[in-house]
Image 1 (cartoon, one colour):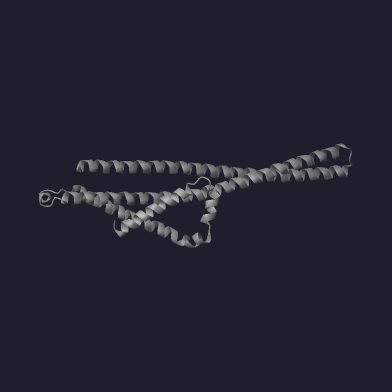
Image 2 (cartoon, helix red, strand yellow):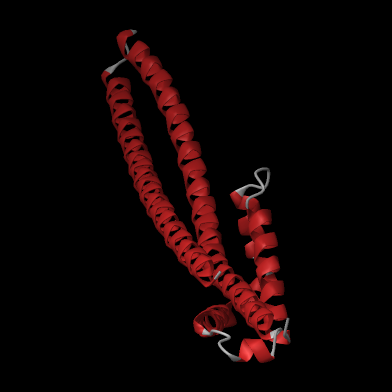
Length: 238
């Protein structure tokens, strides 16, 4: 294996290891997000998009080169020279095997590189949505506690009003009741708006996840078709 294909194979093994780490169930999305926000990643973030696109271009070039090699050695036939050189047939098959191996390595590297980018993006979005949902739930609980407190205060005010207070006390009690009712209405409206926003973000994450699942299934089907075509090509050569 040449140096470039050794590097691509090493890159493929690293991708597999990173994806396995990202799929560990007991590491939460918030923990991964905190890791992604380390200072070292912030320093490398300006170069991330350029490096990502550069790796895609390199892997595509290597993949196309491997496809060319597979077609080249698949179409080659020993012919009359095979009688003069008995090892030529085996040599051609060895070349074809190496070309197919390079094709699989580059293809899987390119595929996992795209999948890894998407998985990291979804983990960040999931952690953000989880934090937003927790904040909305905390805010809703605070609003419920405030509502209970206001209801208790209202009951006390009603009792004070029914106990025969003078007109001044009645006016002050009514004004206080009106003010507390206004504050309660504003807090409930804020809580409802935050809850609607969280539900909208959750629906958006769900739709995005479904779209990613469909795209992932489509890519797997295309990869399976490619493998079937290569397998059928090998059988014809045999």
